[in-house]
Length: 102
Image 1 (cartoon, one colour):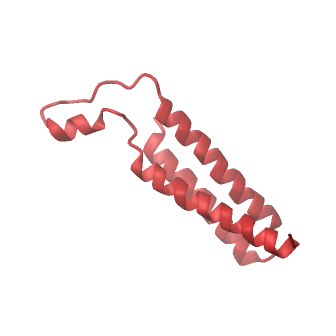
Image 2: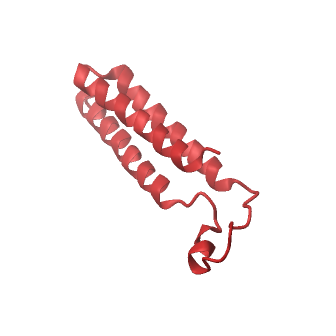
């Protein structure tokens, strides 16, 4: 595989990982019992989700997104591409922290 084609595939994979990761961050509830409050508004707080599996999965996904964007940042040839990868990495961090940081 030529270097240019490999670079394009790597960029495409990093962008796809970012898009998929952001979709998962938005779709994944921060508490598995959050739907109960929508069904019964009289509930003050949903039961505590002690396992924290969603937060751990989301943190690992965030690490993969940021690592892929930092790899693109390190190999970017143009200033505009570097700026975009930094913005995408920061967007993922802000989105994750707004949903899962306690």
